[in-house]
Length: 71
Image 1 (tube, helix red, strand yellow):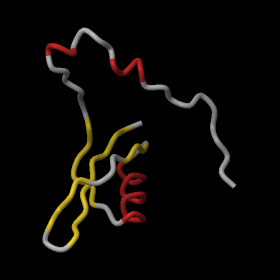
Image 2: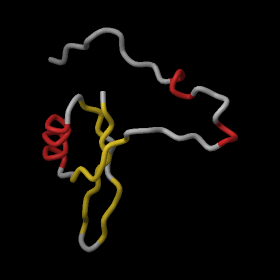
Image 3: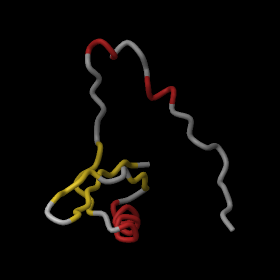
């Protein structure tokens, strides 16, 4: 799973958009198009500040273990 960063524009102002979690750039681009977002980057590394480096924050993220069926 990859994380893609997005932005959107209202008038003359550009805002940070939603983070898109997708398996590929193509999938993320499809999701971005649906929501009117522009992909501006991909998270490729997480670098912690020294005061937070001792904790493994990624261990606190719980990913679903079973697929959900949407009706």
